[in-house]
Length: 180
Image (cartoon, rainbow, N blue to C red; front, side, top):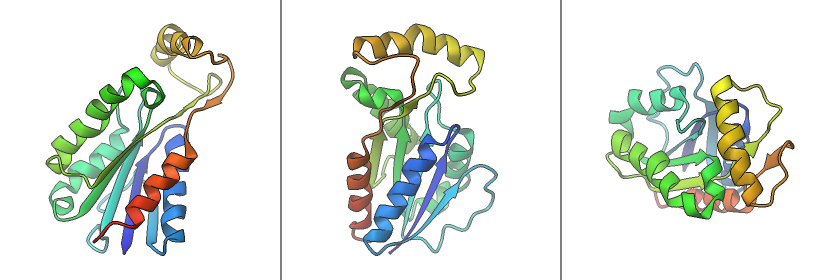
């Protein structure tokens, strides 16, 4: 099997997830290319048996480059096995997981893949209050994210990595072992 992983990232969190998925798949004897969607144009997807597309979520949105890749390749992806994954803060909040699945994965699958991904992955993110963010993000973080972090008993003001690497690796193994 030959797989393509295309990701969109703003701060590197989703890139690290995509690279780990790729590494796990290679360990399972899959030929994998991992590519950042930023600046990606007319990428040839026909040689791939599986295409996984992922994005970090910021302010409730996928990266525009990842969505552009899905939009530009919609007809080609219709004949491929396609998986979607995101990295977002709601992945770690039990009461918000279903909402995140619906909004960030199911709706994107409906719009760009006619609702038929072979797998979806909802993974945690990194909260880094020292990263460069815009004013709106800082305000939302101050009044929403930090409130939720306090509820969870987590220390605010420090970098928090809420990615579950075992879950990410298992997802990559499952992709590698799909029938194609």
